[in-house]
Length: 212
Image (cartoon, rainbow, N blue to C red; front, side, top):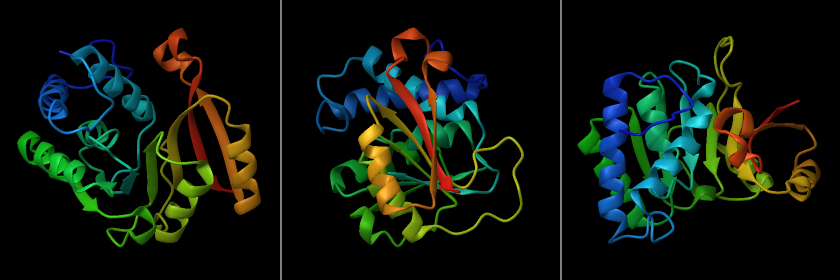
């Protein structure tokens, strides 16, 4: 079972995550869902990384779109962690979305939908929030979200605010500047993952983009 998770999950949820890693390991050997080769330890690290987004809740009943989900990261871990949230995994590569559909079915994740196509053409369930893991620059991600989003009714105390919540690494200054040029109304905040996942993650961050 995956250890050192950054959030408290039930035994049943941890069992589902463990089963997901096993499924991901097997299918990734045939289909390039994550960077290959990827050992089980590598895949567990990917899941741990994604669950940093679960250290703050997503609003109950919200729809969250994962742009460029690949092998279901972070869509699958978030669907496991938040059964009351509808997650939509988006990817342009058909083999990847078919794999995520398989994961959802085998893991019993009724709150996980899959949409195949280019993000700029997305016409699936409108998101209240969007997530992403190293998929595209902030300005691009915000453009995808802003085009498709819908407002969230009522405040959600302590939860992520409506907008973009993504996992990023490295120097983000140019991305933030480009976002400011493209969307002056956008407000950016960053949180280092070192405090959540440990010192080895000090070059990684959670980045949120919301309307100022």
